[in-house]
Image (cartoon, rainbow, N blue to C red; front, side, top):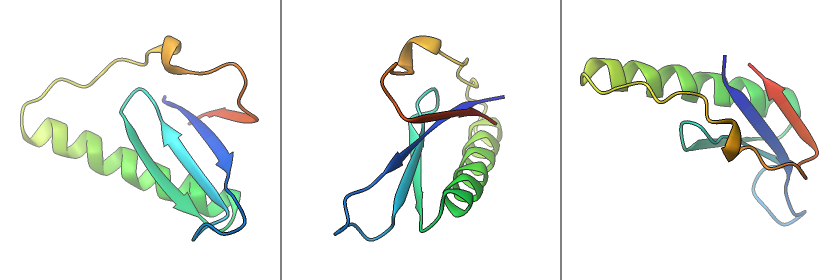
Length: 76
């Protein structure tokens, strides 16, 4: 399970939401929260698959990378 953080973007951004997975250092965007979460799920799966394919270690979940002041934090 990975923790993700969902951010609401500025009105002039290309998508309404961007979402990040701090423990993996990846992010994605979406026009809705649901789309942003779906996109980060795909990004997480692809990133982990790539790490495994190259024999690289899977980073542990690092709770210190999660800021306390964020609006919405989910475990996925």
